[in-house]
Length: 195
Image (cartoon, rainbow, N blue to C red):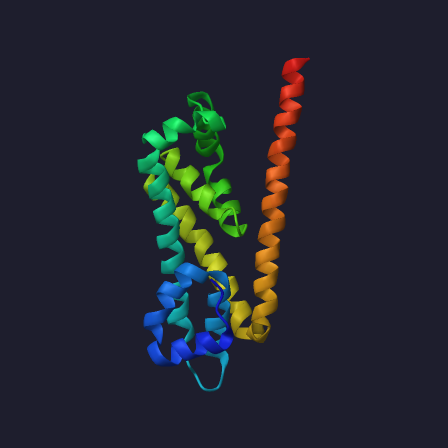
């Protein structure tokens, strides 16, 4: 779902802060930039601090939902049936080990990389990363990310469409590179095992 600036302004004029939280959950970074831009206008459609609070709350809620899916879905029939995708108990053990050693970095990279955040949050849940650790790391990174988006929107918000394109295409490029990296890793690993 993409929303135009005119549609967003109309919603904000009508509903003010009531509309921001659900829009932030659905649209995330772009809507935070647009809302911050509206806060910078002389007409004062919005104030900055409620935007920061609502954007962070929406970001954290979305991440917690993904974490919960992973945490309480690990033992589900669906996960057990994913063996054909290579999700074996041994691989789950490797994922557990990775998150135990590098969980904080993995969450930070996932949150800052548009497009791979949700699988990272599910992965943190699947590995049963302690909730306090997940929440503290996630909150710190969310604060930085939200602060940057609000700053960009407030001072450079008139270019929100351009930023939206950068975020979208940057996420696609990063996701493609991540998939390519995983493929290369498995090709090299399989060649070593065959040799």
